[in-house]
Image 1 (cartoon, rainbow over the protein chains, first blue to last red):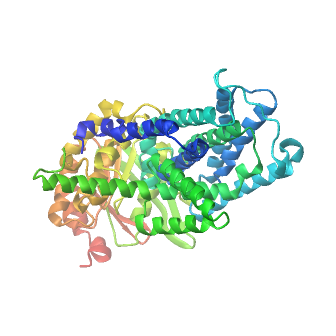
Image 2 (cartoon, rainbow over the protein chains, first blue to last red):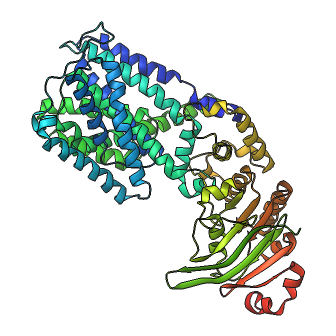
Length: 334
Length: 247
């Protein structure tokens, strides 16, 4: 445990585990027989789950409609590509803006509700947007999806190839950049204030904190990150359909986050990895019934790990280190 | 001792059909240590919540320095210097005392909104938080998660969080609740040592603490303040003995 003066610096410092984790994600590309398309999917879903973590893990607000923001980003990137703005990086950034505005408004709307009402409002917004996109066939192509999306080569150099090599590095790069941003965000005084409001909103009010306004801000940032994930999906597949906005997607991302563990950013990534690798593997065994196993995993994780896989691993590791320290005759490492 | 800091004028409060108090006039003078006593259900905690803005009165006004603040949101009142603690600990369970106090200081100084600078870079505030925790004897517990702190330590943190805001008027809702008599005295001693110049209004049931630390006492009963006087006069007042002290 770090000493008192170093507490915050210690929490904000990059650990060896983290550096190794990101090196492993980059290095995975070079492994033989690696499914880089699956890994790209994991990066995109991981970013999506991470965006939800900001809301659920750090602020304690559950959303059952997070696909609304993912879809908003996906369609925005689709329209940009279809109507001549093919440059991917700027397209990605632009796609985050409408979703951020939508998130900000959602935050305004849900400031005074909590619990089941909150779930219903977010779910309701998701359903409204889904229905709107599905019915506006002239604009969105309806169920057939948006066709004819063109994306320029990345940085003017790397074409999005059919093997998904460019998609891999582009998704990983975007994921990492947004992760660095979100990491700074949660380690800032504002991140501390969000955690405070999660723990005890009434006391935060009595500290003079604008608790309600903060909900709009965190919703906007979370929505923007979710939209970035959606835009990545559109840009790397050059296609977007109403499925990006489906309730199923909202439920899946919540499941990923719960399995991985909320409240530490990496939980979403780990959850996406477990969920998608399992899905890939189970769907190969039995293409129809794979949700059975996902459901079982969810029940087991919530029943036995409570906080998700990653926090349980952390606790286990810490216990192990403490026991090893004792076995050697010393105290736990200072 | 003559300047009124905080006052209420004709304050009327009811929950549904249940009247809590009717046309309550009250004033708190600069530098006072003012105790509120009264039987359970007399509306003491409700009164504090009306002053801090967690509740709104049916009619009547709350004034700070003569200015009506009845419609101000609670946060604006905190910024104006009205700070409270809670009867039941209202803390950040998953945070440790250092994080909790740094959070309070960031809010006080308006440094919690620009979002991407690390907390670790707020070294002045972190230093101030450490100093405050030391003063309250919580230095050794700075990194212990709040939920695992002993109850008495949590009680001190409850007050430390309020003091971190540099209040002008501090409202304490039974600061010694759940503590032994000795611990109660320790909390009050520590509080009074660290709060020079702060006007204090506290609700307390322990008469030993009230008569020792207050210089004015208001007795709430039946929706009104029946007596407001010095501790010595309150102690011998026959109406107080009748409704409250039960002798």
